[in-house]
Length: 311
Image (cartoon, rainbow, N blue to C red; front, side):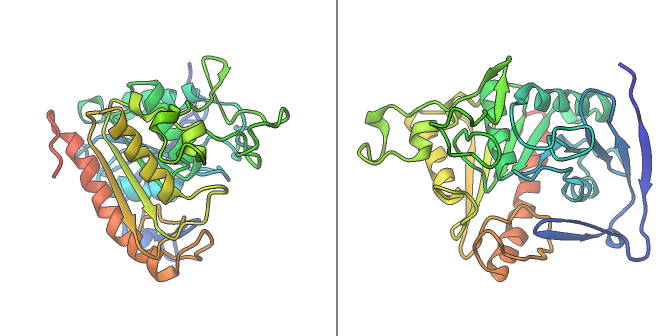
């Protein structure tokens, strides 16, 4: 397949600013990175390459329910030495307008594209997602061994339905958000005897992502004041993932970073610019972003080693 490649060297410039929800990134403070458009390759997005090859794993960045192309996060990660793809899943040029029936294979194709174009360390590529992008990252890792690790910020930890109808499980007009091998992806119920409160099952109990099938390290980041997910919270969802992994005696490395007074908009990079629209306070969100960003970097940098060791 022929690639439509658009290369740009992003240099420091007066007033240069890259912005996305919940963050700001002043390009003047950053080293130059190269941006390559992958339109025409089977995936849509911008691959940001660091100024020097530092032997780091690659990263695929996944946006939330509103979609778009998460350029700011990917650019910041490239400035930390990681080749990073800002993947457009929906609500972007050359992509569907909304999150509905998105093939999980599309994410795996993005991983392959990063491997081919960026030659990451040991061929490893991390999925890094926020909100519904975090849900997609966890779901992808439960269906494929291709991801080397997952970092999920404020994720929905059950398999929701399409955009605007995520909890309409009994609605025949609600399309699945994701497909796998041409079929709708549904959550896997936790056996009743494993539920914390069988009389009042949660959305995670009834429609949970089968995280017990994940074979790679997982890092979860949530705010204790998150109000950004209808019917549950990211904090509760992340706790349910950790519990489910324990119940199924998973041997994978898993970490849950939880922050006081932080809400939904905590995916970084720092500095956090607000507003706090998904719960929490601006100060709590800023503290969560400032603390979780370097921890996420350290989590991913460990994958540069042939035999990763996490501390």
